Length: 151
Image 1: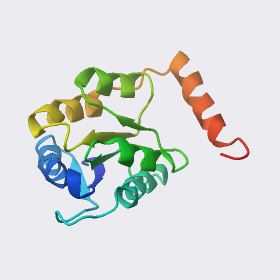
Image 2 (image 1 turned 180 degrees about the vertical axis):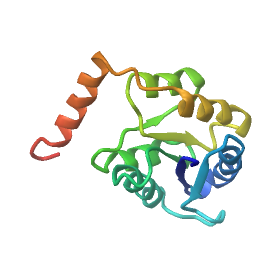
Image 3 (image 1 turned 30 degrees about the horizontal axis):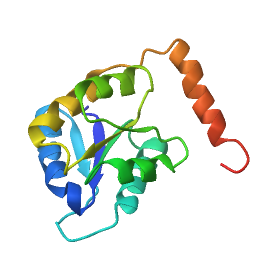
Image 4 (image 1 turned 45 degrees about the horizontal axis):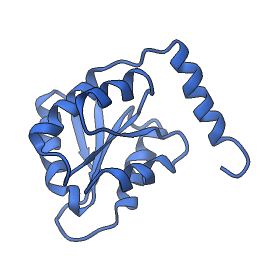
């Protein structure tokens, strides 16, 4: 069974998202395009939240979000309790986001990365396992912060 990957973008990430939907299919995944479905202006928090909720609910193990820089949509996704969205601009960051941070959401910038640059980032992020060990303790500390009063 193919792994389902929810993916969403705002208008600034629309073209890159569309490219990555096709790339995910080529890699053997089942992308679920949660929007935006056109280049008309939309608000990135809506799309970051959509993907993050799919991931933290357990409906999907991982997801991808795209906006102009990836910054806004990663901030929005990380507001959902349990989301660990990592903004990656190169392959090394994608590898470390998975290996050390167990990032469950990849954030990319459509105005920062070409499809040719984004594809290997996505592939690396998908193929890199979480190391666990000492990193598990650190991930638990992140979860503990989410459960503190006022967070």
